[in-house]
Image (cartoon, rainbow, N blue to C red; front, side, top):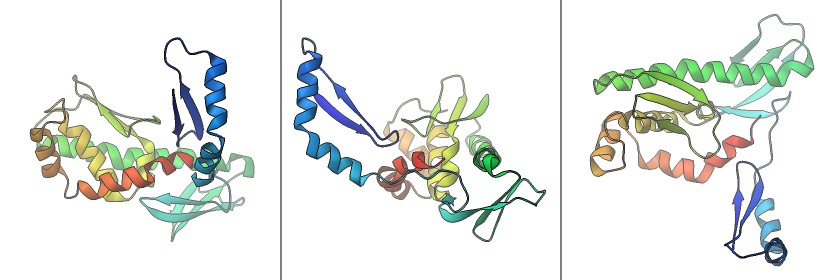
Length: 205
């Protein structure tokens, strides 16, 4: 029996081998109660996109401020994310703004790196996956998490380079990693950052 924590979702998953009853699984989980509570205490708190929340943009903290009388939509300025309109619309407006910023940053970067290796990109799409930061299909379609815009820029750049390198190598061979190193100046640092902090990006919004 395997009990694991999905840090992004904040839920536990219990995997039972064939022949194991649900009652046996629940008894096993009950025996792990102290471990479960300790892991829950370690999870970073969820951060909704509401006035007063601190949200990272390219790794730098930004405070969300509601500007009910402004007529500018959402804009960033001096460590602040300003959102106009009704208070109940702030979360949606901030989410839309961050997705738009992610599109403006990630898509051109992916196409630029693809040009560096003379490989065509059919399409670059943005999604919100829970288990990976990006993917690249054999037909040249790249998918990236919009939440990368919350991470430091070198982390974002590494993930884009990683997926673009898959246009040449659909594996993780030595040749693949050499190409990743040619496409981005830092590999090990972003890998460590994602391992330590990546799950926390799913706590925003």
